[in-house]
Length: 90
Image 1 (tube, rainbow, N blue to C red):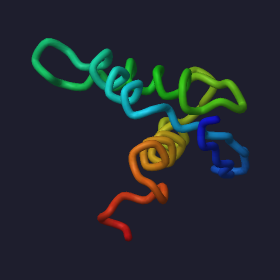
Image 2 (cartoon, one colour):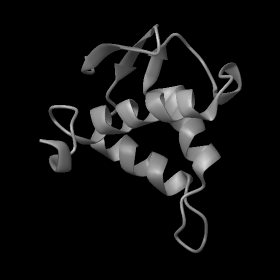
Image 3 (cartoon, rainbow, N blue to C red):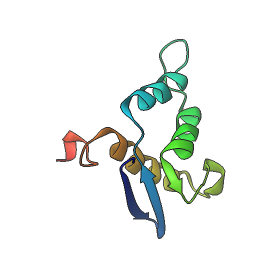
Image 4 (cartoon, one colour):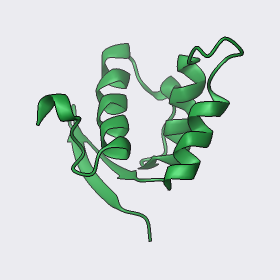
């Protein structure tokens, strides 16, 4: 079973689920252009689909980009780091 964590962001509770490392690398590859640059909207769509499992939302469900960034920051840190925090904030 995948590791999950609940977090409340801007008054909304989200459930995040870690994907296996191979799948995380595939997500990064699928959302990178031929010049090696990340395609932000595609990357976020993949995170909404595979990591944010409840509620099932998309970028279109948010009124402000700042809200999207808050959810994405948590999702990416949760996925990449064992304790959900990047080394720079430990």
